[in-house]
Length: 457
Image 1: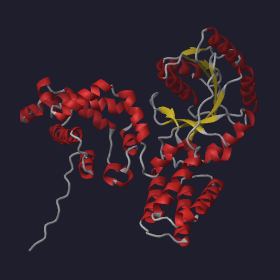
Image 2: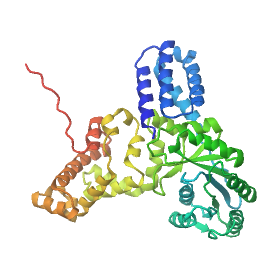
Image 3: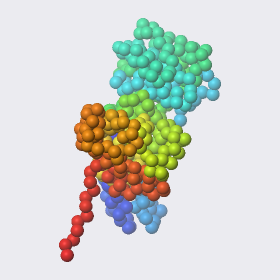
């Protein structure tokens, strides 16, 4: 979502860093570029004006102008202010000390609210909590069935009374059931509504009064841009929400909603949905997002994702295999499956520091279907071939291609890429980090690196 903004800001700050000393005109020029970048990203005009004013004041401060490395100081200030714009270091839900924590979910029709309810339930389940969902959206066709289905996938219990009961009564009944069954969390899914629909807004206020939730979360579609900010302001008058769940943050919108909503409403983004899968949902960290936008990566989030998927004992065994050069295609397949569980590969690459500056990696065509083909090719091999790819001759490659529904060229590319990966992994296991050129060559598939030009004597 932030790709275009990220490129503009990184380009501007790179120009600032290249100067040994900054003048006021240099700062003005940088502020103009940053202002244009934010406006193009559909950030609220008033927010942009206040943001760049604060930036300029800090960048013209004595600590920057007299610094030995003023460009780096400016980057530091932009990072801090960008994180502050989105909410600082992040906020937490108000969890109940006893009894179920009640979370009321509100949002417009089509914002992905019901899906967000199930994703939030899955988030709490991973933390070991007993979660229940209350189906109070009785107006949208199949909304109850959708919540039951997705709630089951999240491992949550769903309280529902069909579509004929009153939503306020369903919410009260669900809360009583959650209390008697000693649930840890109750998430109430309310009807998606238009902010001009006074009847539904009044119903939302009644449910809030009846259930007295610990948190009211507004689900906002990031694809709606600045309109999302107007929606948040309308809901604030009735629901008095505590935080925002931003959906479709993986879309191709320009990011204006995510950058504007905290500054306009004063309410932080607490969670973000970054994909279609129920697992593609996590806490929103403004400071980490700011670092990603500026090309600094997001190592903490990457580590957290890896810890959720990688077993420590298996990791030690794999490291020993890599050190002894015993890494096989079976190991490659296992690692590939674990990495895919962490989310889209393009997102993982974006978490690596410095990847924004490496255009070959950044622009690499990360096709998830290609990974499916790789898996099919490996599974079409015999155990002996997976353990020792060196024995795969022409006839074997043809058989593997036929068995996996691919071409011989695909098999050739995989074997070659595996050899490259094994060399890199052995180096890393022995404490030697691969060069950017090696990383780019591996990310770019089997494209050959350009040969250096030889001078004629």
